[in-house]
Structure formats: C-alpha cells, structure tokens
Image 1 (tube, rainbow, N blue to C red):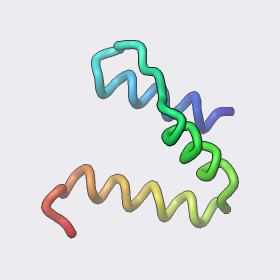
Image 2 (cartoon, rainbow, N blue to C red; image 1 turned 90 degrees about the horizontal axis):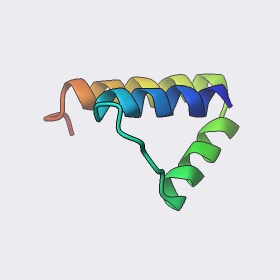
Image 3 (cartoon, one colour; image 1 turned 45 degrees about the vertical axis):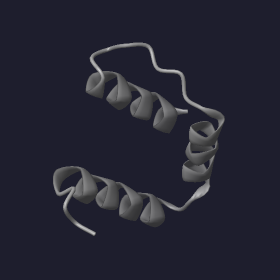
Image 4 (tube, rainbow, N blue to C red; image 1 turned 180 degrees about the vertical axis):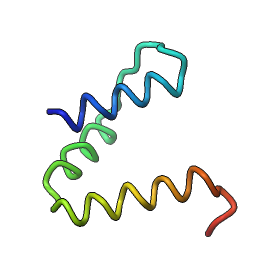
Length: 58
C-alpha cells in the first residue's frame, strides 16, 4: 500500500498535482513491483533514477 501511495505522490508532483488515473497496465506493474524482493526493488528504482537523470543512456 505504501509503495502505491508513494508512487502516486511522486506522479502528482511530476504533473503539477493533477489527479492521475493509472491504466490497467500501470496497475499491473505496481502489483508486480509489490511482489519483487527488496533487492530487486532497489535495482528497479536505481534504473528508473538513472534513466530519468540521464535519458541519453541506452
């Protein structure tokens, strides 16, 4: 639950506090994210951060 709340909070921050409705695919990704281990979750978050900060990275 907290993962979803944190993600929605970050999404709202990114789009200027507009109400966001996640698609079925996005909700499914959130469910998968909840089921992975803490180590895998950390790797995913680091990857997302790297891609966000350095979009030229392939």
